[in-house]
Every structure is written in C-alpha cells, then in structure tokens.
Image (tube, rainbow, N blue to C red; front, side):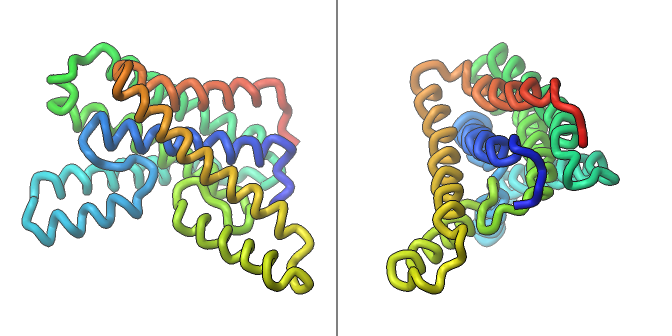
Length: 229
C-alpha cells in the first residue's frame, strides 16, 4: 500500500461499508439501480437495451452519467495532492460526499413512499455523485487486489491468494496473508452495508439514507484534527 498514513486502510474498510449501503439504498429504495457498483449497472443497461426497455435503460444510463460526473469532480479536486497528503485529500472529498449523502437522507426521509419513485431523477444524483467522488478518493489507494467498488475483482484476488497459501506456501509473497485479510474484510463490510440497509428497508425504510451519511461524516470528522504531511 502507498504510504498514505495510518488512517488509509481504515478508511478503505469504512468506504466499503458505505458503498454497500449506498448500493442497497439505490437498488431497494430508489429504482433497482446501483450507485457504487457500476459493473452491475452496465449489465442492467445491456439487458434493458436488449429487451427494448428504453425507460429503465434511460434511468440506468442516468446513474452511470451521475457517477462519472462524481468521479470527474473527485479527480479534479485531488489533482496536485501528493500521495502522502492522504488526510487532507480524503477530508476535502468526504466533506462534499457527506453533504450529498446527508441531503439524500433528509430528502428520502421527508418524501412519501409513493413520491420517491417519482423523484428518481432528483434523488439518485445525491447517491451516485457521492459514490463517484468516493471512488476517485479510493483510486489514490494502492492495496493490491482490494477495491471498494469492484467486489468481483476483490473476491477473485482473495481466492487466488488463498489458493497460493494453501497449496504453494513456499512461493508466496511475505504479505499475502495480510492482504488476504484486507480483501476478506472488504467483502464482509460491503455485504454488511447492504445488509444494514436491507434490514432497515423492512423495518424503518425512512432511515436508509442515514447509514452511508453517518459513516462518511464519521470518516470526515476523524480527519479534521490531522495535518497534511
């Protein structure tokens, strides 16, 4: 991993939880689209186009565009920062991300169930742009085989590493077990975020927006006292 400070690994783990909860909020609450996992959206877009379902396809394409805008904004805001300035970089981005997620949470909580689907094009940008910004931040991390938006790749790298540990231990890199633990925690936390909002959707659907908002706000606050290197 790049030398981004001792908070970087913790941030990655928390961002994975946020991504899972945001994907669940988008899929279950707003309109059966993902707001972090763009691979899933590309599959949905292909299916919808293949079946001539143009209205759902337009909605999926809209989410992809909003995510791309978020990545562009995040990339622009991180330009000029050294890798070692992780605290300042992540604080700058998560303040914006937290603001977007809080707006989504409040908008969602105050909107009736009947009106939420009507307001799809108003609600989804808060989540999709926020996840794009988050992905731009995490793009600055280099933890081999670990990402917070592509769980298929993370799972593949985890299983490749485990196979090596089990059957070819003598030829393994020194840090393979440590990396495998990070990969495993990444997957568990992503699923945990989705689980949390899946449960809330059944028991307190008004609160699903607060799960990602609270965690990103906590990440932001944890960096406020840290000086950039």
